[in-house]
Image (cartoon, rainbow, N blue to C red):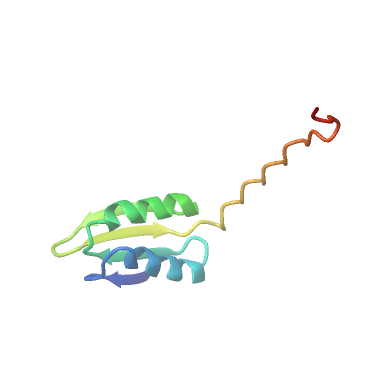
Length: 94
C-alpha cells in the first residue's frame, strides 16, 4: 500500500500526485490518497475511471477523505485513429 498525503493541497494537486505515484506502481498495488479538497471527490473517481484503475473506497475521516485506488494491469488501449474521409479527386467541380 502506498500513501499519498495531499491534505491541504488544492485542485488539481491531489490528482497530479496520485498520477505520479500510479505511474510508478505495479498492477494490483493499492494507493490511498488523503485529501481535504472537496474537488477531489469528483476528480479522483473520474481520473481512476479514465485510466482504467479501480476506486474501491471513499472514506470520510475526521479532517479529510481517504480514496483507495487499485492500479490496473496496464494502461487502457488507445482508440484507433479515425480513417481519413475518402477524397473526391474524380470530380472536376465545374
